[in-house]
Image 1 (cartoon, helix red, strand yellow):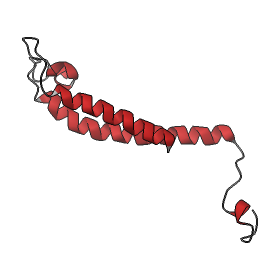
Image 2 (cartoon, rainbow, N blue to C red; image 1 turned 180 degrees about the horizontal axis):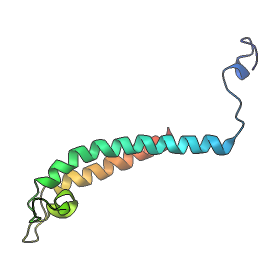
Image 3 (cartoon, one colour; image 1 turned 30 degrees about the vertical axis):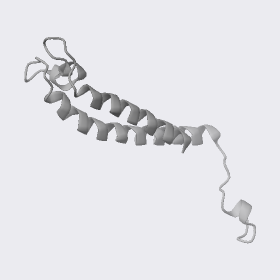
Image 4 (cartoon, rainbow, N blue to C red; image 1 turned 90 degrees about the vertical axis):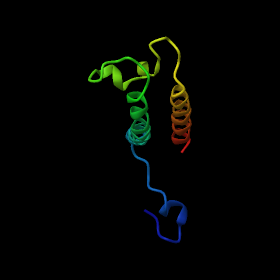
Length: 99
């Protein structure tokens, strides 16, 4: 560690293990992206539950994208929220990678 007068080496810690630094950044990226996905899923799950599909009330299929399709085969208008959320998560991931 240099003296405060030598600011170029004083502010930046020495990198000793590149593999460890990459692993920590990768884990931080995954954590931040999973937080964004959790927030988006808190928004999407109620949309799936209220969808026009014919899944039984206490079935796991009630909580997924297949419940947004009408029994007649027509796509629900709620599907656009899923498309917007997919683009949002793609943007968030790109932002986090470049951060």
